[in-house]
Every structure is written in structure tokens, then in C-alpha cells.
View (cartoon, rainbow, N blue to C red):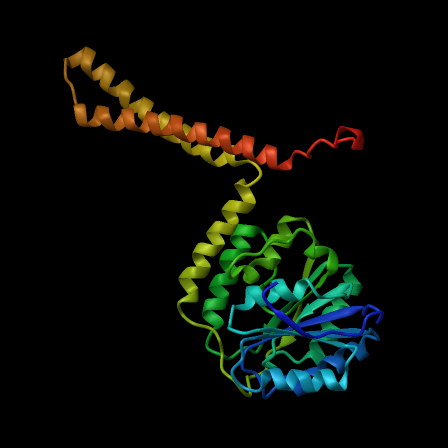
Length: 320
């Protein structure tokens, strides 16, 4: 864990029912009010709670505001700190190692989501429909990013068969969802897709979007192509990581079939017209060689995957 743990409840403190994870970068103007609204939202659902703040290298007074909240609620606040900004995925990885609640709620620090309203909505939907994951669906959004968000969510629904409309917004999820969860850079956007592939029950509930009152958005246009390639990489891994021969074998058979058709055509051409077309012959031969190599890689990948899954044999103490 790269984060420093600056504050944690005393040992022996009872585990809360809800852990609210709050990442923050230069959000000094909202931290105190955010904590009050989180307390209001959790009180509305009659649940004990903790707030897990992660300061991602803020250069303003964000960290001090978090310390002030911890002084007010010493047994309900954890504070993690990054010396330099590492990004939302890293804050998430560190926070998920520390959360203690049976339900985790991800809330941004900018108050575009009002926890006092949204926590009861998320928890009510989860309890009412017995769901594992509940996504907030922003209503009335007017921050200039709606088009990019719509495209992202539309592509994600198509690739992953997830019906949620707003997969990169606030969400509540059960602790079981974190089991064996592995994240890489910027994959915080794909939590819902990963959980859907694992069979968790997912729903959504409309939530009100509120304009940002302080700080500035961390969104950049450079994220658009990065997110596109990340989505493709995730789709590839979720589809073929367990059966890599499906990908390499399929590609190999395709190239092999095309190469064989070319070689067959040239063979017929040679015997019927005594004509040779060497460039096309070399191209077809190359396709067949590439097909063979892809099949070999596919079989090797299958052996690697099966080897990683195989449980090592248990050794009797007398054999040591």
C-alpha cells in the first residue's frame, strides 16, 4: 500500500455496517460539509458508518479538513494520504484494503452527489431488490461532459451486456464484490463491468446531480482515447484470459484458412495455365506460418493458465 495511514479508529472499535469511501484532490471547500451529509444519509437508513478519506496528494488544506473531521468523529474516520497524486484507481486500491463495512459506498468529494439524499437511495434500492451493486444514475447533469459519458456508457453496455446507464458514478456494493478484485491503472471506471462478468446482481437508481461549488474537475480530453483502449483491453481479458486458445486459435484458423485458399488457387492456376505468381505465393505461405505460430502460442497460453489454476500438492510435514 502506497498510502500513509494517518488516522484510524482505536483497536477494538466495532466494525460499521457501511464504509463510505471518499477520494479527494484539492477539495478543501467541501470536506466538512460532505462528512455532515454522509452522517445524515447513514442515519436515515439507521446504519452505523465509517468514512474512509483518501487524500491523493492535495496541495491545499484538504488534508487538514480531513483531520478536523477525524477529531470530531475519531472512531468513524480513517485517513489515507498519498504524497503525490497517483490517480483514482490507486486511491481505490488503498481504500479497499482498509474498509471495514459490509457495504461500501463510493462518493466523490466535490458534492456533485449529495450523500444525505443519495445514500438512502442506494441502500434502499440494494435492500429492496436484494442487489449486490447499485449504481447512481445522474439526473439533470449539466457539466459539459454528458456526451462523452453517454458514448462511454453506450459502448460499455454493448460490450459487456450491462443495463446500467451511468457506470462511472456513485455506487454502493457489498463487501463480497472486493474478493479477488484486481485493478490496474484507470480501471476504476470498469468496476461494474467486472462485477457483471462475475455474476453479481446489479441495479441502478436515479440520483440528482448538483453543480460543483469549489475546486475543479479532474476530467481531461486525453482520457477519451485512453478509456477506449482500456475498454478493449478489459473486454479481451475478461473474454480470453481463461481460454486464450479461443483468441489465438481463432486468429490462427482464420489466417490458415486464408493462406490455404491462396495456395490452393495458385496450385490450380499453375496446373491449368502453367502460371506462377510468386508474391502471392509468399503471402499465402506467410499466412500459413503465422497461423501455425498463433496456434502454438494459444496452446502454450492454455498450459500457462491451467498451471496457474492448478492447486499445488500439499506436502506432509514428514516430507519436509
